[in-house]
Image 1 (cartoon, rainbow, N blue to C red):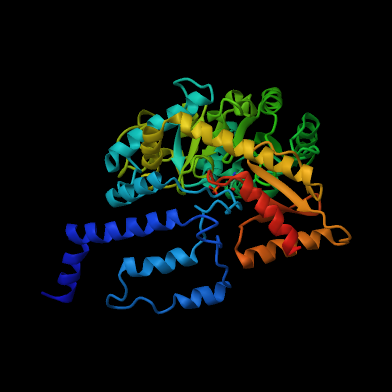
Image 2 (image 1 turned 180 degrees about the horizontal axis):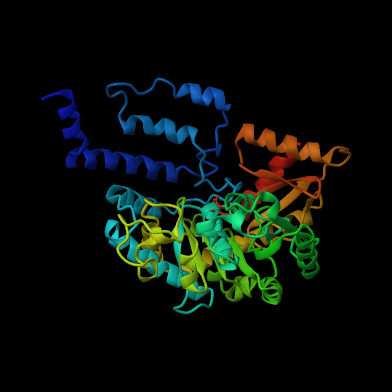
Length: 477
Ligand SMILES: Cc1ncc(COP(=O)(O)O)c(C=O)c1O
């Protein structure tokens, strides 16, 4: 037997897989059990990027070097612990352990779901999940959509459909050069992927015209008008309006009714970036934040943000399902047999991506195991916690919030008595905390001032953790 034969036998040996699998799951379960402030005082171990990269150099070669279970403790120790209740930074969620197991099954089966026959079960699950999301938005059977790997591709996909639907000619075939200059009206507070999408779809970044926001970071009707006039003044024809539900920096929900009124009056496609906040549709207490969503043309929803799903899984949902075929009006005879519109089950007609992970599977098995109320309860608890956190700071008196939280994102700053450089202070606190690793928080700039920023996305975070966070900030300051 050659060395290759020997390794091949081992690589696909069911018993070896079982042995390694048990060890890996045991190590992950232990890691989860120890993800508490008492057992693990650090949520991350910050190392400078150069030395981190160097430490992984030369660690694989022509032959085997290290077994995975032997490498895993180091991977766990040096990675960020998103399961830890004091990990309250970006909008990357704590992964539901069961969904991670679904990920394992999905990676194992590796049914790339570009077309139905490549991944029949996953395609059917995704179809049902999209229908479910559409139903929550108040849409009927005419609605349809697809999953993409992340909200950035989701926004791109929706804007491509908007471009095709709003252009005078066939932009897909003839290119944007065949059209008078177009514009997309976007919130001043939009995620950068929206502006990037405008550039990627050939309109140019300048085509993303900013709609100013009010003191609560919502687009206003006067703002719509101003942005529209600005676009027209620059010789562009606006074709779409993008609203936030909610925005990245402050978690603010635009008034979707007002956005829908304006879009209707001006004949614009209304796209709602619900990457972070569409999950509130599941919460009886907070679903009112999305009132008006049913009047949009498309929206996205990242289940890897507020549905506890491991990255990535984004639903891109269109009120008129047939328009989802407009984004990529292209035939590939080696993949597709019929006209694209007859083939809802061949998702590649409607996404940038060809092969994809079995992303629907993770969400489907989680909904089946825990039920939709569990996820609604999670969103409600996180949004409630954000309000409690803001109240705590108000009562403490030595902190201020940028705005009363509407979702689970909270922007705040420490008002150290006698400090003349408050912006510099927040920066220094954030840096010190990153290096110490006791909590993970991030920062943002709003109206020229620096704010600390938390996303309360971990269901194990409690108000006591947030009290401890304030105490830690005071002590570092
Ligand atoms: C509002 C909003 N839209 C889109 C995105 C991009 O999503 P993704 O990171 O999945 O590409 C984000 C990410 O933070 C977001 O907050």
